[in-house]
Amino acid sequence: MKVLVTGAAGFIGFHLSKKFLNEGIKVIGVDNLNDYYSVQLKKDRLAQLVDNPDFSFHQLDIADKTGLMELFRKESITHVVNLAAQAGVRYSIENPMAYVESNIVGFANILECCRHNSIKHLVFASSSSVYGLNTKMPFSVHDNVDHPISLYAASKKANELMAHSYAYLYKLPCTGLRFFTVYGPWGRPDMALFLFTKAILEGKPIKVFNYGNMQRDFTYIDDIIEGVYRVTLHIPKPNPDWSGSQPDPSSSPAPYKIYNIGNNNSVSLNHFIETIEKHLNKKAVKELLPLQPGDVPKTYADVDDLQRDVGFKPDTPIDYGIEQFIIWYKKYYQI
Image (cartoon, rainbow, N blue to C red; front, side, top):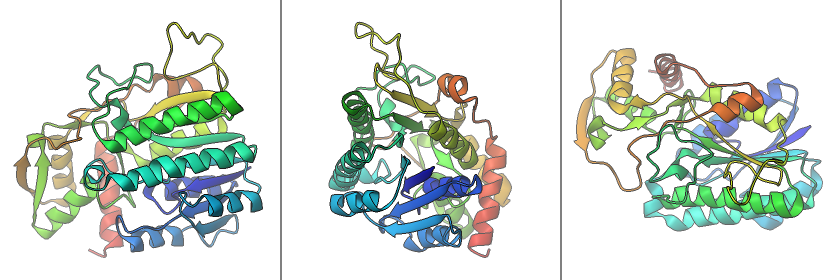
């Protein structure tokens, strides 16, 4: 087994590469090391991986079809986990074309390379953002998600549809994973936990959207990684009970499956901030603001399918997860 992890210098990609390597699985890491956030942080993550003889890294953009096809031709890749993407809901409003290039064109290149190289399983990152205007809680993979409210969310929904077409036409086994607000050590600087921790320590105000009434299914990085690892080894099979008259969006007569990976527990933004304050032993200065365009007020994952199929359910408490992040943050920035 040799896994290609795209976005290997990213938050999830780095942790996942480490997990595969710890399990004795060879990893080919790909990342374009763009400057959407600190390139140094990405390089510091990679530095934790490069000494392992089972890891090789290629600085490559998945939108570069020629480069990607050459990599697949050279390496005997068996599985692909595509985590490379332009991330962030709010940035998709400012810079939509970055999402088209990476999340649509780049993903099409991944699909083509998988198709032509007999890949055993393509696992790809989707997002809880695809639920958009859905209000039925908890969010279920069996419900339709046809009303995204950001281009980021639309690009992730597009990935699910594109993957399905390849699963159907070319029998390429594909699994899409809808991640719910991932946090933890080595996290992204554009995410709330990182932004809040930095601002509170510096005595600067934090922007609290929807006046703190947002609710998020915060999912600890170790839980995400365990879920992705198990799913990668669990190749989807066609669903014999699938019916076109009552189509289930999460499965197919093709080898295709969608899962949520979330903590199955919605936490208010106010409680999240209080927990950060507790572990920093310092109060936040809050700037209360309305809900931002593209943001959904609440997320909450139904993970029954994940638990049934791979025997795993995320359950790390928010208190522990935030504490671990703050320990890492202080060590990394030598505070």
